[in-house]
Length: 64
Ligand SMILES: [Zn+2]
Image (cartoon, rainbow, N blue to C red; front, side, top):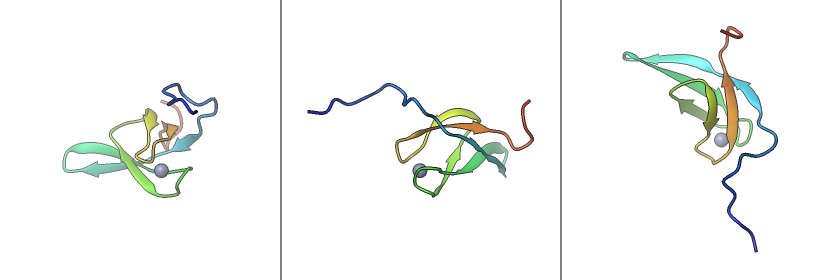
């Protein structure tokens, strides 16, 4: 009897994303702490990975 949770998990890992510029649009590539694969996102901040988990993407150069 499991309920599908839509709430965020208590612990959200913060990871550093690498900027990736592709023909005019900026994307961020991260190494997923959950599945160890690389995922792409369109920006920093709280994101849900394609593998269904959440993480907080920070920029490489520290805080801005
Ligand atoms: Zn993943």
